[in-house]
Image (cartoon, rainbow, N blue to C red):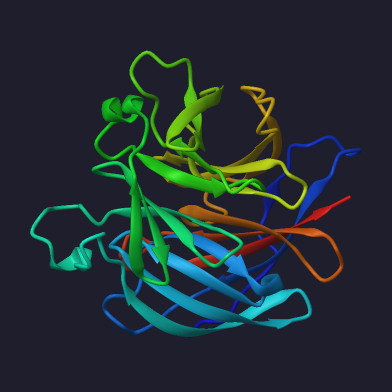
Length: 290
């Protein structure tokens, strides 16, 4: 397993008087198993000690972080298995291409979690790996690009799901922010499009704000940024709190926002290596400094 490394060059965008992101560590997570990789979402649990990771082939793993001070230096993992459909069948056993393209995860306080699937757009609720319910997305989702469904998924303080697709539905002014209310969805705002960035991860922070991880792919590599909005009053531009330098990180797709023992907000991200040897699975962590 390769060691973690710190001190990558970043280009931060907020004003000096505003909170800024402090880069704490980048851990390169590597395993010999053929099925390892393709991680698309992460949910940090137990005050930063544990996590759930979702892969884009409907695999799910739980693990624990080994930390030295503020630096992640190892991961103790425990494979959980394959995500299943509501009929109890594992997605990998189905003879339908991409039906198990799991991309987003959001955890509820009671331990249940939701997973969004990008192709054949839908959300499934889970108790451990057993599916307990299926939630269809708004009708507007039917016009999404085949590979542009919901990757950004979050749960607010009222237990309502918030979902943002990676592409813009036909006729929409920007990326819609959908919020589940009972058995229906409301569009609570739209995020503006700019510079080729697309929403790929989201989480509600301890401060009640919606943090959105966005990714852009350029010819020579990936670039990421984080926008923050108020769920009940969405500014289409949002507050841009961080933009990475080009190729500073790999393909960051998953985001979890939580509070550390010092009472400060941390942001933990994971990259999708697309199961390619030339890419890496990185677990990247930042702290929001006042």
